[in-house]
Length: 69
Image 1: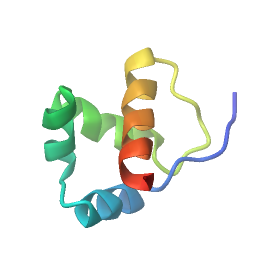
Image 2: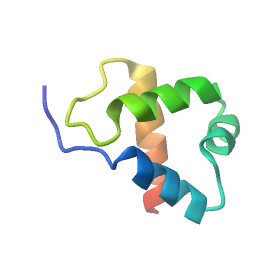
Image 3: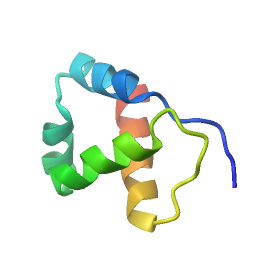
């Protein structure tokens, strides 16, 4: 199943930095394991693939809302 692509990994990292956060900071603040967030971003950022797992989708949606708003 294809959907609109997510921002690339570097765009995600850059937008988090503009918000004063690292990926690890975001993960800890949201209650996720930093390694899981790193893997999800690496796997799906810049991809048209939609995550199958609920946790991966939740992480990406929170990232999107955090860095776009």
